[in-house]
Image (cartoon, rainbow, N blue to C red):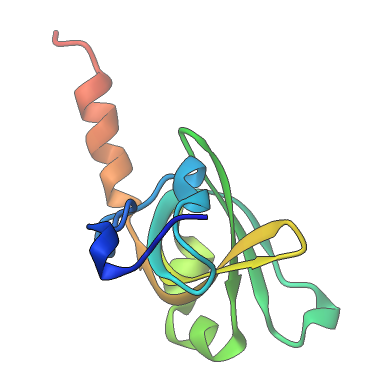
Length: 124
């Protein structure tokens, strides 16, 4: 277990607005406020979930499960529905060996993908 007391020095994970990778989600304690970013692999809105949306984001190190409560979905609806790449800020939750991010803010950063394509394209 990591010692998070002030005497232990700075925490060993990035704080928002910096994003953690999927592989780094083991560093902060459950309940920590974090940010993640990735490509949207899956959007699920089960009929039995009472309006809750489940997102799966992927980065270069793995996948991140995100829970979006109904009220937050209403606020960030456009990003959740249309975003190809999202940045999510929220609280880390670990329960029964499963790690989720409970979303507090969602930002569509799909525009960044266009920059990657321009950078990767060979010069004429």
